[in-house]
Image 1 (cartoon, helix red, strand yellow):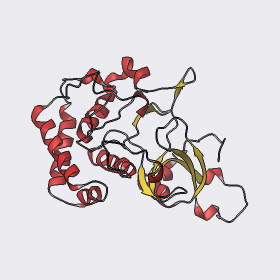
Image 2 (cartoon, one colour):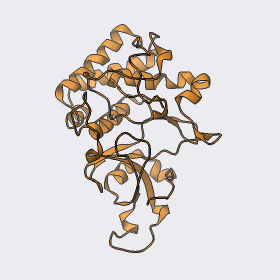
Image 3 (tube, helix red, strand yellow):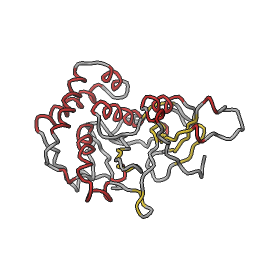
Image 4 (cartoon, helix red, strand yellow):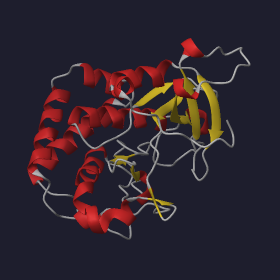
Length: 269
């Protein structure tokens, strides 16, 4: 697939059902792959095709109308880090997605873990970013006009202890929705929290979002499906710390005050 442009899936009514998307990302064969430039870890754009319309041993042309695209981050391509256990970043991508689904925010593209050409990894639905003057929109290009639209992402980062919120890890799709991506560096309390969203320092959390956080904490403390799913992806202490952060957010009621010299990611975009 090298050299082919990534194409955003056409969200027609049956594909827009997130359960259907989840099944396709997890089970459809990968029929094309190309290296995505610019990442510190190996990241690939992959094409996944309906197996009913594609045979792996066939030389027939792939049916683009029966395909979707994803971002594949294999475990084997994860760069060793001092503050994260090796081989866990793809699972943290999936865990962040599951927490966002329970909360109802922020928008994170459907994300699964599965096998691929380079082994086990995460596969996330590809979102085609809107452009302005040939440059993809991101937090820095939008914060003057749409700062409040990033409040849920900044709050989510405090909850999952995100160590890598760059400006470019917020993208805008053609319909104007803001999506949060790149959550491999999350949930580990040992890591330093890093973000570019210092505008929210010390301001109050939205009350309605705090209500969602309370529901999440109650759900995790009472056990159930979400707790079980997260324990397959995270360590028990990391899950306990997630609940602790949730309770502290409710108690204190405001975004943390972070240092723009110490708590900034690199690069920033």
